[in-house]
Length: 275
Length: 298
Image (cartoon, rainbow over all chains, first blue to last red; front, side):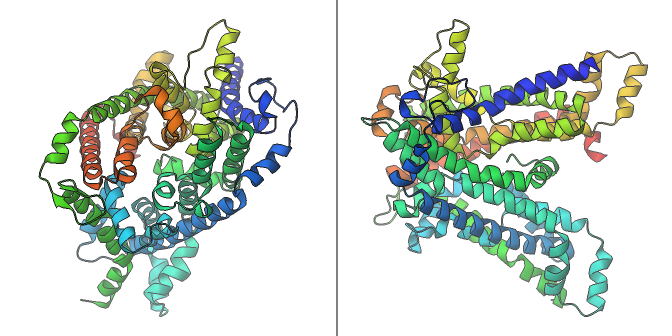
C-alpha cells in the first residue's frame, strides 16, 4: 500500500506540472498587462481584470473566427466521417478484383507526409479559383481519409456478416446495408473519426496561412497568429489581448474533449493515432 | 462484371477519386515540379537538377536540416522516456485514479499548437517568464529561451515535452495488455523488479514502443505550427535570432508560399519525403530485430 501512495504522489506532482500552464494562461489572461509576469505561482488572478475578455472581442473579430472555425471543423469532420465510412464499408463487405491493391493504397497514403503534396494541392485550388476562400480548408475531405478508412474498416470487419446477409435476403439494397445497418452499428467508431478530424481541423495553421488572406475568413489559430504578430512584440505590446485570445482558441476544444473523452482515449489506445 | 462488383466500385469511388486528385496525382506533380522553376506566373520552366543542386549549396537548407535533426534527436527519446515513466506509474495504481491522471496528461494535447506556441512564448520569456522565475527559486539564472540562438532549440524541446498525452495513452494501453501470469511466473523464478521490467515488460510492450518511436520521429521531422507561431511571420522579431529556429518545413513553407518558388519547394518536399521514407525503413529493419511480436498476436 505505501508503494501505491508513493506512485499517487508522483503522479499528482506530474499532473500539477501538466496543468500549471493552463492555470497560468487563464490567470494571466484575467490580469492587467502590468501584472502578466507577477504573482505567477498564485492560482487566481490578482489583480483581477475581467475587462480583458471584453477587450479582445473589440480588438479582433473573435466571434467571426470562432464561427469560421466551427463551420469548417464541422464540414471537415462530417464529410470525412461519412465518406470514409462509405469506402470502409466497401472494403469490408465486398470481394472484388483490385481490392488488395486499393487497400495497399490506403496504407500507403497513411505514410505519405502531407508536405509532399502541399504545392500541387495549392495549384489545384488555384486553378479552380478557390484560393482566398475557405473551401480548400475542408473540401478534400469529401474523398475520405486513409486513417479513418482503415479505422472504420477494422470496425466493420468485426460485425457479424449474417446481419447483412439477412437484410439482403429481405431485399435490402447495398446502400440500405450501409446506411441502415452499418452506419448505426458503427456509431462509436464514427464518433472517434469525427472528433479526431474536428480536432485536427481546429488545430490547423498551415492551410489557413496558405489559403485565406482576408481576416474576415480566418480561423481561430490563424487569427491568434495574427494577434501574436500584432500585439506580442513591437511598439505597443498588448499581452492581455494575446492571452485572452489564446484562452478563447483553446477552451472550445477542451469542452469537446470532456464531452467525447472516452472516444479520444479509445481512439488513441486502439489505433495509436498521435492525436 | 457482377452487380455486387459494380456496387463495390461505387463504394470505392470517393477513395479512387481522392487518390488520383489529392494523393497520387499531386505526388507525381510535385516530383515533376521539382525539376522546374515556377512562380505561378507563366508556366513551369524545366531546369533539370538545378533545384537539387541549389539545395546542396543552400546554407539555409543545411541550417534547417541541422535544426530539425537536433530537435528530433532530443525530442523523441526524451518524450518517449518520460511517457514511459508516466505510463509505468499509471499501471501501478490503475483504477479510477489512473483514468483521472490519464485525462490530465492528455489535456495539453487538446491545446491548438498556435496557442501552445503563444503560451510558451510567455512561459519561456527570458526576462520574466515562469520557467526562469522557477529556476530563480533555486538561485539559477535562467537563459533567454526565446531570443538566445543557443537556447531556442532546447526551449522548443522543453515545450514539446508538454505534449506527451497520446504517447502515454498508447504505452499505458500496451502495459495493461501484458498478462499478469507472466509477472507471477517471473516472481516465482525470483526475478527482481529490474529483471521483471527487462525480461517481461519491455519485450511485451516492444511493439507499442517501436510504434511510438516511428510516429514521434515522423511528426518531429515535420514540426511547424508551434515554431512558426513563436518565431516567424513577424519581421521585427525575426531578425534577432537568425536561423536558429528555422526548421525544415518552415523553410519549405517560406520558399513555396512566401517567395512563390514552387519548383524549389517541391524539391525540398521530396527531400523530406525521401528522408522520412529512409528513416522509417531503417527503423522498421532495426525494430524487427527487437520487437517481440507475440505480444501483438494475443
